[in-house]
Structure formats: structure tokens, C-alpha cells
Image 1 (cartoon, rainbow, N blue to C red):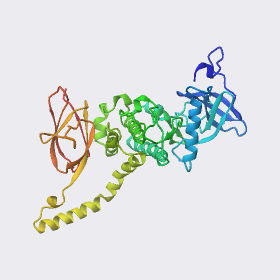
Image 2: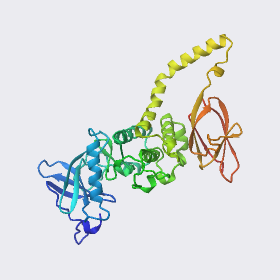
Image 3: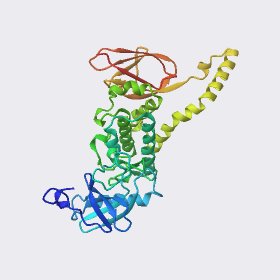
Image 4: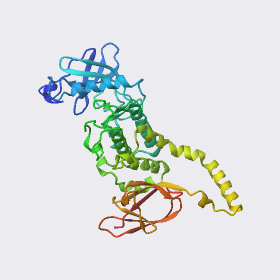
Length: 386
């Protein structure tokens, strides 16, 4: 909000605008289009968060009109409130502002929200200031983020501003918030949001939300800034050594592919992929038993099992620095158009066998990453020698 949108006392303290039925305590957040105040309901005494968006004269950019349009779409399209979307209790208007009333975020300490002067809203952005998340926590928050986003996509809408600052914690649960840029999904959606979370192709569709969600999960995995993507820094080895983190990184690399058609189509597809590792593990003993039986029968009959049933796998390649060319058994790994793959990337249809892997960054000598059994390896992480 600009100074003319909120009165300020001589000492610089903002004067609380008049909002029906609520006493505004103090600002606790702001964005490009409005300001969030901590408030109490005069009748119930319940603590709420109230977002204020200044009304503008007709003509020109009107953030309040855009916000109203987004909220109308949200209410019209969502059949019910999703547990991972921030609940909006009421929308109203004064002579100067559009306002809407929401649940307040927990305190950043993990305690419930309070009217105390030391209250700081619990956002994922604040949580990431302490560094990367633990594996189980990272997996849990990734699932909650994607579940909330998937509910929007299922209703035919895109969020357009998925980022850690818009992920709040209420009652310990992650809630996707800030619906001011929500709109219907179509190819000509305007390019709005936060620049660093926008995909390079510029299309602000469901795949753009997927791209942004991938970057948010990358930040949870690494504790690094989105501007550092796809570097893993000192997190490369811990991620490679932990099955949960490795699976999440593989998810991130596909979500953040430069070519939109190679990303997940929407958040639901991304969420479904996230559930696959656990399901695959549950089925592994039976699969191994059946595979052993088939191979034994074929061997007794004199047939080569791998000739009859060739296997192909999908592997993620990550290097530090990135943009390295990949060599398998001394041959450059090429995409279907004959263009060399460069890291970071996820490559499918690879032979499920042991391969010798090498990498080469532009202007540097090729380096040996070692032998990998691709049937057992979902991700290869390597650092260029100094």
C-alpha cells in the first residue's frame, strides 16, 4: 500500500482504517496489492487476519477490482473449501478499501496466533530462514502444497503466485494463500506474479504453477534461494543419500523443466507422482518374487529373459556446476530431436543396466562420475573436479 492508502501518525505508526465489526490491531504483512492487519472481531473477540486493498477510481489499474474478480472466480468454481487453502470468512467494502477476513497464521514460534507485539506470522518463507527442512517434514509440506494447488487446478483455475511467502501455517497445517491473481486457466493468461518463480517460457498456465511449486520444494530441500536453482550446494550428498530427498529432487527437476510440455500437466499429476515411491516400495517384494520366477522359467527353457522383456528406466542427472553434457558409455546422451541433454534433467527410456557415466561442462575437461546400475539408480549427482 502507498502512504496515501493508509493514514500515518507523526511518528510513522499507521492509523488503523475503519472496518465494520473489526478492531484492527497492527499490520502483519503486505504485498503488491494490499496490506494484512491483525484484527479482533468486536462481537466474538476472535483473532482474524484482515486484508485491505485500496479502491481506485475507475480506469487504469485497479487492484481491488482484480481481487474481487479473483475472489468471485474462487467462490464460483470451488465446490468446497480445501484444507490446504486459506479460508476466507467474509468479503466486504468500505468507502476506501475492499477487505476480506481470514484465519490468522500461527506464530512463527509454532504457538497459536496472538495479539502480542512479538507475534510474527508463520510462513514457509520464515521457516526457510532456519535452513532446509528435515526429509519427512519436506515431504509432508510438499504434499500439502500440491494438494491445495491441485484443488484449484481441478476447478480449472491457476494461482499465478505460488511462493514460500504465500504458504502459511494455520494450526500447524500448510495453507496456500493470496488469491489476488487467481484466474481461469487458458493459453492467454497474462504474465503476472513474482518474477523469480515464473517459468522461462512465459506461459502462466497450470504448468507455470507446477514450475513455481517445484521451485518452492527445491527451497525446502536445499535451504537455498530460488535464484540458486538448480545448484545443490553442500546439500548434494545429503540429498543423494536420502531416498525421500532424492525422490523430491527428481520431482523438482521434472516440474522445473524449461520446455513446458516436459513438465507435469498440473498439480494433481505432480501429487500423484509424489505418491509413487511409497507405493512402489510396498509392491517391491511381490514384484521381485514374480520376476525371479519368470527369469527362472525362461532360463530353464533356454531363453534370455532380458531379450524378451527389455527394461527401461528414468534417471535424473544433476551436476555442480550445471549445464553439463552427459555421456553414457562414452556416447553423448541425446534427446529425441538429437540435441544433447544438459544437466539438470530427467531422462527416460534409458537401458536398465550398468553404464559408465561422464559429464562435461562448457570449456572444461570431461570428468568421470563412475559406474552406475541404472536399474537401481534414480538419480546421479556429481561435482566437477576443481
